[in-house]
Length: 187
Image (cartoon, rainbow, N blue to C red; front, side, top):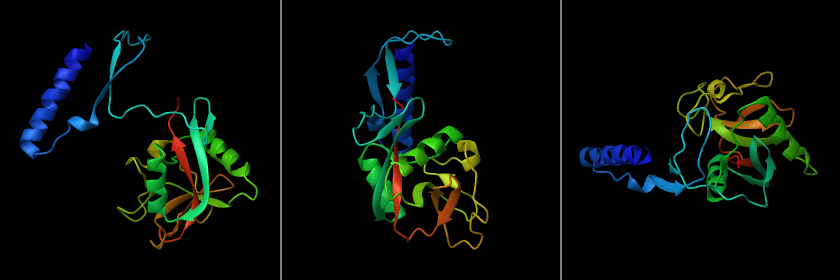
């Protein structure tokens, strides 16, 4: 089964390359994994992944079943913060549930003094009022869209996303430097 999937992926890559003159082979990694069992019945020892696995970091706080988070106390612009998280193998945090929101707030409160508001991985840079995550999902589809009263700002001047210590979402100007939270995937 895995060989068939790889063959199909390779064929699609070749067609894409031929039509668009762009290579796509560098985005796939075949990683041997343990045999999977479960409802799907997939017992294939090979798994096709789009990105290589992320190593667990000692400077992140991990919550079982949720993910790992790191508060960066230095103030950066939103795009600089996004790049910093990516260099660490993660991304600006995206809140997908109440449990994840609580985990991030726990990380914030563990630092004294803790920031009142931190940047997250969402924005409305593409269309005012249409907030999406850095992965392109709407906040509702991502699983958490609880805004503070009076938020988001309606005049279009605040396009980058943040989380208030209260656990509610805010938006702020992208040219304002703030602390931020990076997220690592679940291990």
